[in-house]
Amino acid sequence: MDIQQFYEFCLQKKAVTEHFPFDEDTLVFKVGGKMFCLTSLKEWEKGTPSLNLKGNPERNEELRAEYESIHPGFHMSKTHWNTVQFNGDVSDKMITELISESYELVYKGLTKKIREEIEKEAN
Image (cartoon, rainbow, N blue to C red; front, side, top):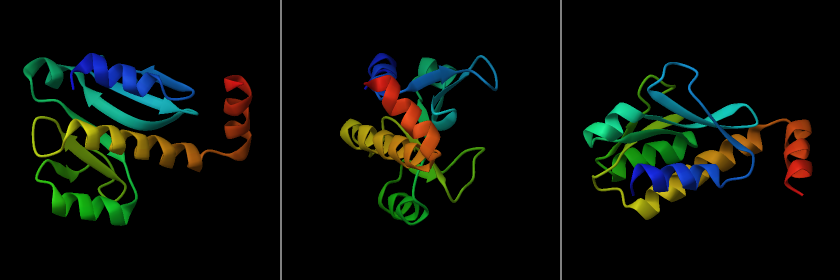
């Protein structure tokens, strides 16, 4: 997966917006104003891309045990976030599944009012 494929995959999800809230390097994808995916553009340029993705705490532990390329979230809550390195033992298919899981987890955590507004805009 290259950066364009990653970018398009994230933006095709319902109500996703992109931001640079920390600096001009850290691309953040949000749904309903809440982060679900972060990445460093400089790391993509260097050929060492990774993503920070939100996850279920128990599943996060399982993933870290199963994959060498999945670690506790860099600069994030180690319980709720993982850093997933590209070009390792995690397939592109698995990375897209993890992005989708992160999105769904954050979306489900939004208030009912925000979810209803998103649904209304989507229809």
